[in-house]
Length: 351
Image (tube, rainbow, N blue to C red):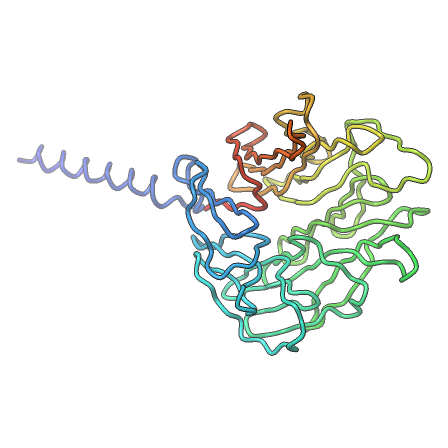
């Protein structure tokens, strides 16, 4: 009997340890096989990792971004019922804010901290039932996914025209202080008269990494310190051209390493762009078919970290035989191709 009880206790202890290991990891990070990946299409359709339709968001006029927080997922965009809000776990939630009626609502991005939702509904930042205007924003154009929140500190990026008679733009950062969002121009090299901020990643409350380009080079700003990113292709361009040779459009931080997703051009004619992921400044191309004759262009849409892993979503575009463009999206895990989708996906989240 004594041996039976000892064996039973050992079995129970083993079961308890196994259950804790599988279901309650201390850091909350799930093992690879238990993760859920949600992929977002611009029309509000959400797909699984396997490419199966999971949810079609109700009353959706278009979406911009999906994020996760504590097992829930949140989607920004615009409702067909002309309401301001977001989707939580597929259900619409209206933010009861007092807007002027003639404003068109379009949420450029979404962030979350504690019980607060932040929406970038230009020219405002919405925080639950609060509304805060971006100061001096007459010439400002927010970036796609242009908002990031860390420990309640909210950051917004984009660009603005130098003046009404110019096509040159400045990279712009908005930060909040006591409910007021003030604008600043991010640093650019001497002699450079154009640039854009197209991505933002906030962390540890007072720190951020912004990304975009300055002049013709891909660039990031780490707490306002400008860093030019190297390119693999030696494009030089022609005199009078102003398009950037590379662009950063998404940023993630993983184990202290900075990951920047975007693209760089393969030639001076700017006909072919290749999806590019920079890790601490070193570029890697995540492309399925750049060597194919009908390859047209591609880009990294979004990069995100989950635990020690880095997921990257790309798009590729091809010239079709009938003149119609062919496209697909691809999901990568730590630089390895995970899956290809016959869909044009714009955002993703892992939970």
